Image 1 (tube, rainbow, N blue to C red):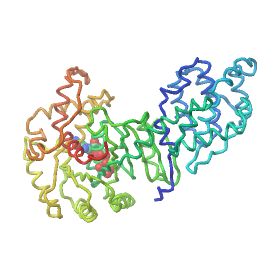
Image 2: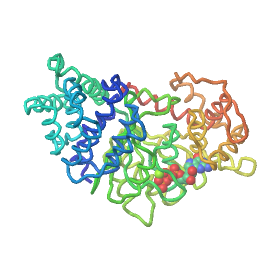
Image 3: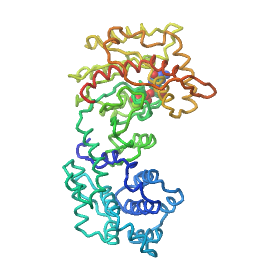
Image 4: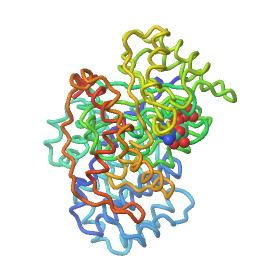
Length: 497
Ligand SMILES: Nc1nc2c(ncn2[C@@H]2O[C@H](COP(=O)(O)OP(=O)(O)OP(=O)(O)O)[C@@H](O)[C@H]2O)c(=O)[nH]1
Ligand SMILES: [Mg+2]
């Protein structure tokens, strides 16, 4: 695994580009359409793969309010090389038959901004611009001499390298580049604050990914009822980011401007990808949403069909660079032999990292029958203490319920099955024994920072045919254990705000 060789600075800055503030948004439809048309030509002749091109273009389409039919026509231009593509676009825009139209575009500073934008998209990790035939065609057509192109290139390199360009941006011809500059600044400010790293480890199917999704308040990490997470996945909360972006690295690499869960699952299933890094925002209900905090998901260590999974997790533990390790114990399968093996390895490599144990899947314990959370906690405590952890913190939790309740509160869509489960779990958390707070040491709770989140309560939420008050869902969520875990993590994020 040689991840250090990848430098995705530009891709990361692009996540901060605030397209809502794109200068061309203020201009007429013709102008905006011309803008996206030339950009699409550059993208289609550039270094990105087809999915990446569609991803970037649809982002612009949405922000520049381009009509579906026009966008469709644009995407379906057939061509044989850059010249043909560029010519077709000029005809499509009427520029060939109506020089007045093209002159307007040329005389505005937008023709320069667009050249900059096209160049930025081709700026690679060694601060060089990939060659693209559209640059020349475009610059010739709009009579932008090579000196202008060079000036733009040097401004772009300075901006992405966080050098001071304030003086340059005062020049009239460079004014519009303030838009890139402000986005890049936002990126650099966040990049410079230390991030808190939270890594989750456990044996297979204990609920690591479900737990992280519950903390984020949305589905990011692939989770399934079978061996699922297959590599290193990291999600960093960037409070000022504009869009969720993603980078996959390995034998081949890929990037997204607008990352979707489908992209992530595809990357997770792709054996040529070794590492996935995502940047985005946590759910608005999260107490941690204002912090630069990274969550790292790891594969279950005991997959007998793929020993590589264990290696990945071992490598991550070896680095010892987590602030917090979340160790998930499966309440329905406590202290298994596989778990013992993992716990021994984790303890050995713990160093200064804080460890928090989660007793997960407590909703699956049948508290009416013989099961009891108190007993499970006692067993878990003895088990981890036997492995050398002095006064462990163990939080009973139902990650699945927590994640569902949070998604509902945030109006995120659920599948039919999830809706059904949510209703059953809401019912379950009405029973006092399922309130996880009852099992957590009072003094620990008292010592934790409080939530500063104002939740808009008092609204009715429809789940299937039932109407439930948001307050009830919020209260149920607090009983799942996630709330205490968040407060524990809040305690560990002291320097990252
Ligand atoms: N009832 C219940 N099910 C849970 C809970 N947490 C996870 N699950 C389920 O357990 C299964 C495995 O969850 P994952 O989150 O994929 O587990 P994982 O530890 O990430 O698994 P690997 O990535 O394969 O190691 C999924 O079907 C989850 O829905 C929980 O608290 N309660
Ligand atoms: Mg997983």
